[in-house]
Amino acid sequence: MSRVIHRKLVVRKGGVLRLKDSSLPAGKAVEVIIRVEDEKASLPPLRGYFGAGRGLFSSPEEVDAYIREERKSWD
Image (tube, rainbow, N blue to C red; front, side, top):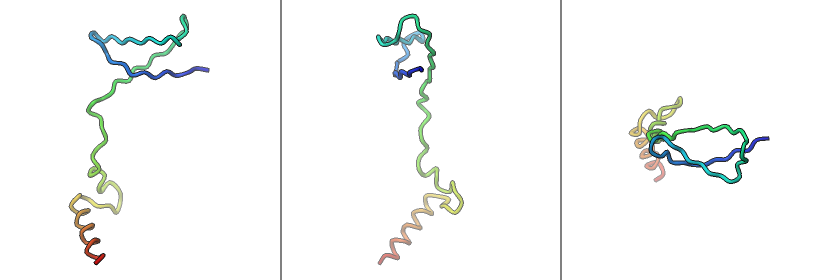
């Protein structure tokens, strides 16, 4: 059975990574996977979801108008 060790590292000059963990057994084969975080990748703003599904609003303005009308009906 294998175990997984997660560490966040910073890439040093020249693309060097340093990982030291005394729990790693000497002479044992390990697999290293490197996933570089994409700084530009982030969740789109919520307004990007308006109109994404059938029957939903197609713009933020339509949402505002709908909410305004609903609030008027409460009186």
